[in-house]
Image (cartoon, rainbow over all chains, first blue to last red; front, side, top):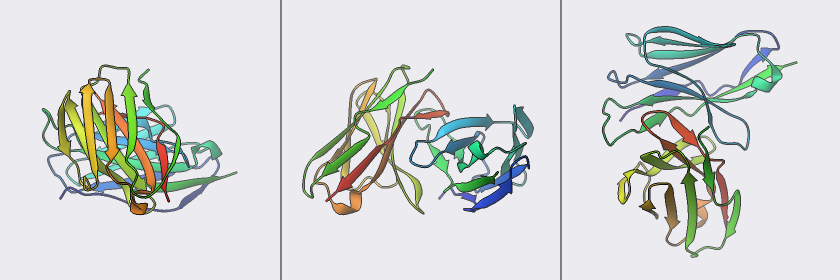
Length: 114
Length: 110
């Protein structure tokens, strides 16, 4: 059973701080990793994806991947109250073809305090 | 931009009713997915489809069926709605691994 674990939070940070969200996964063959943001009552929206070890930056967001440790994280710099949401980590299986399923973590609730 | 739409944002049904939830995507994606999301349980995959008329069970298919007669449309059917199917239902589509979600349907079964 593939598992994706996230700290459920809530993670509370002050406005302007760096928020660090973490995710571990069990399937060593996973190759694609995704971060989704979900506002209360809304559907998940894709923020970033990462395939290679190391860092990937997009504006205030940085995804970090360490396949050896089976660990992926999302850093949000200069956090804003509008970043307050649940962040879902998702990981692919190690087979492609007709089976493009993702396994989702349960999400971390982030609260950014003004 | 990818657009995934769902037929209803809110739905109230009675126990025993047959319920249809529809999802339409406009990006010619091969893959479509139905999830339900409940507090503390996260997103759980009900069914997915990788081509027209092709479907596979997800993690919690019991009490549900699906239909994909056209590439752009994927329907979730609750054969006989029960109160434990009260939930947020999310549809997603993808070309490969990146999934794009519809706005969701919040279903209440009384």
